[in-house]
Amino acid sequence: MTLLPVTRLPTTRHAHSRPGAPGAATGPQRRQLLAWLLSAALPLGMAGCSGTLLPQPPAPPAQFTLDPAGAAGTITSADAAVASTPARTAAASAASSPVIVVALPRAAPGHDSTRMVYLRRPHELEAFAFHEWVDTPAQMLAPLIVRSLQDSGAFRVVLMAPSAASGALRLETELIRLQQDFSTRPSHVRLTLRAVLLDTATRQAVAWREFDEIVPASGDDPVAGVAAAHQATRRVLAALATFCADQTGR
Image (cartoon, rainbow, N blue to C red; front, top):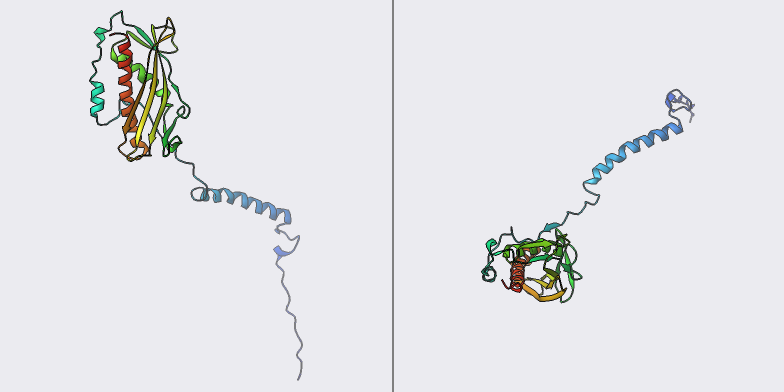
């Protein structure tokens, strides 16, 4: 057998692959190019992930007021009985009617924040995660008490403390509880307010009373609890105004 000679083909090296050839990218240049590509791609990648992978901020909680004035609802027989108490007219508020100063209501522990409180077990307070009061219940009660006393017509002027003016009487209140109770079905809202009427001159207590209202809710959810709280607030305010007016003998 005759062996044929092996012919080697010439190898061709491209100019851009030879080190030092014109147009060839050096090591530092390649690293700079890679860094630029990464810096340009990173914001695009983050923008694409922001709608899917990154956590979204939680939705703000729904906020509610305690003012029952604009709340829609059915007037129950209990509400009608309270509302049937004769209110004093403006004409009856003569110069001899006393001036009363309303102190800012205090609140018992657990009821001094904007959290909307509920119970599932006795004595264990919990709070809704996505529903809250627009202000603390005690703060919201203050102007409602002033308005209720003024509407009663039993007082010449109703002032909110602190005030530069003084009055013959001072009303101090404490919110004992405002909570929705789920231990029964349907749930119910309980509002308890303690009131003390003081003689400003002697600093002696004229009278005191604790107002406690329990109103069934139309459902087992916080929105139904707010509606029940409005009813309870309306009843307590009416009873409080009658109580204060009775102490003036009018």
